[in-house]
Image (tube, rainbow, N blue to C red; front, side):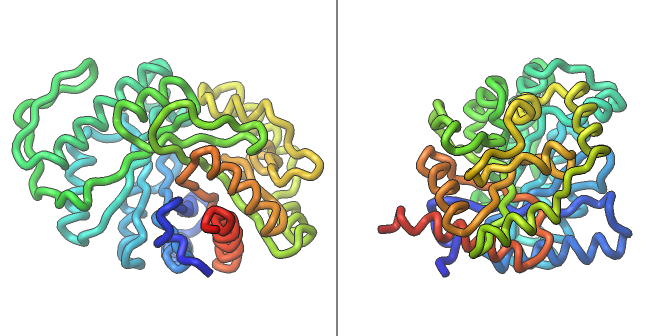
Length: 337
């Protein structure tokens, strides 16, 4: 099988499990296991969530770094949690201590109750304007040997310098949600990867803006389609309580991607695209389910549209992630011919 990490046509990221479903010992062990599986299967990195209900994403990333040799944490960054200098200092420190590369998943929103608890009433589009300033300061500190000064609407720093300096090769890549016009504008301003929650490939338009594009999607692929669907329905059974929770979340969320996905049918005949886990509040992304061939064909269509980064859902086992990467490898085969 081809090495997906060495193939420059796309990047795969897995996702770190959440801390609110495990004991401390089990959580540390599970994070280490998922990180090792991800590295073994050729993933570039691993998304580490951040919200009020989870452990600190930076300390979780430390577990990942200690248990791998090259896997890059994709750390979710919420501006209301920390000053941009603190984020830059953490990145520079990881570079100094470990010589490791990371990515930043810059989060403009989050759960409405989380933001209210932090007294952040900033409107949706203004949060992206703030995110541009916030990220600009972080990257300027990491890219500049000397002191920087910056004056914006939300942040101001004067003759601020980062020590220890970060090697140029370790300056982080940046991801921003690309589901709204404000998010796309922020990604463009920052030179970041814009991440979407995709529609079915037949309905998904090619990104209208230049730049790097990615998507968040789960995969359940097997050699036999019937086995893939059996696993999918067993792993994500319909749940009335989950459906009610999803409906409640819809009412209080101002996330554009959440609203967009909620308008799409849960499943359609002969299609690998599956939203039942999302609709039952079991996961926060669409799924592709089916045989290697069917899932690979759907992935290849997304790649042909211009998507190059894929952030996968949490892998339940090493075997499951191996099946997923097998489908991605197959998706790239026609391109290589």
